Image (cartoon, rainbow, N blue to C red):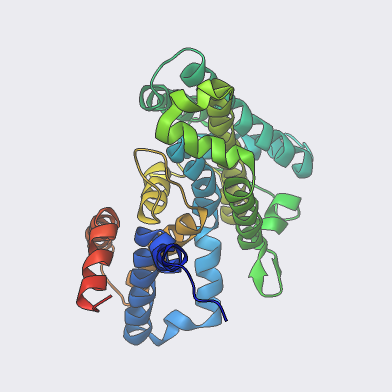
Length: 337
């Protein structure tokens, strides 16, 4: 039997553990989510009912769909403030098209293409015109929602009960709504794209050091444009989901959705300044934001207090996220590891 050399022992000793290699903020937010779920389940027996959990999954589905795409945007060092406006524009325009007699399945396809087109507009201005993403999407946010308001004159347009869109919004499979299934499919696709394909590596590299990625022969401008286009497509899908669930399209829908999505992404462990992204963390963030709103409603909290408590909890969650590494180091020292 051979004795390991000192070098071999050193290599074995220095190998990082699973905990050391993991995304600390994501783990912490996962723990916080479980803790808050336990608190709400004690405060309200209805919280863990299958009906409420299915409703919660349906509620967070649009946030998750856009959040997955926003993970790529923020990881690449960009931001997209126009996703809520795009979702509202798509919801209102889809309802208008259906009202003219167009087949709703065709409308769904057109809606996705319209979302993609708005994303390409943002991407072109950011990537090829050099305008900061914050300025571009802030401007297009106003333009896009304004167009929707101008077209609908602020009225909500109903969608017929027998249309495919309404069936998607009200139907379910295996006890889970079709909207939640869409969120699951988008989540899995985003997970593969971010962590298993070169595109995800390029996005992460651009966010951490764009110049080095460019010198390696990667067309960074095209990647950034694709990331913004992906965000627009996701917002288009979410717009269809919102209209399908509500049974109508309104230019006043999805107000503040972009802030909820960005909060979910950052809470989950994606670095707001780029270079680190986690799709799993975005799922946790989406669940946490939806869970807080759902739980506060079940415990009967005043609707006037709900946004205050939600904001304070999210602020605390983001603080924990930003201190994730320091807190994990403290726990390791206290445990003697």
